[in-house]
Length: 132
Image 1 (cartoon, rainbow, N blue to C red):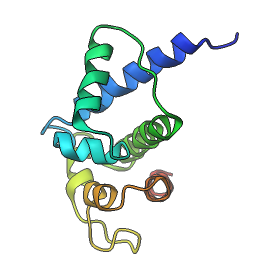
Image 2: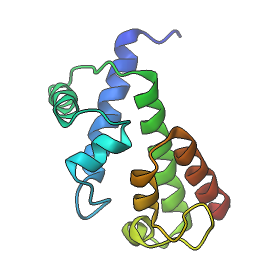
Image 3: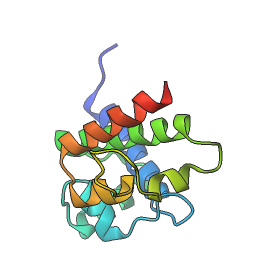
Image 4: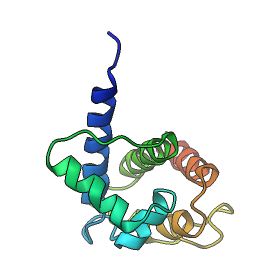
């Protein structure tokens, strides 16, 4: 079955709804500015307009870079969930990591201060290697 443009846009809307839930202080505790940075420097107004469309169950067309970032963030979330004790995922996101790629920073700090796709991928791979 071939995916239609609309089905991809719907998946994008679901991904944006998910990342908005992660902004909550009980989860990743991200400000609007921080989530905008993680999504490649999109403006907060653009992000809010995407969320409005998603909340109205409308599809959201995103550039490939944004989709890649959302995918990598989901992979990072999954790897944290697999490598941390249940209920302590928030701690793993916010606590400094003793590994050279983090340079004493937490996962959150590393991704925000160095928001390149390469950094996202390196963090995901590191966390996945711990989860095995």
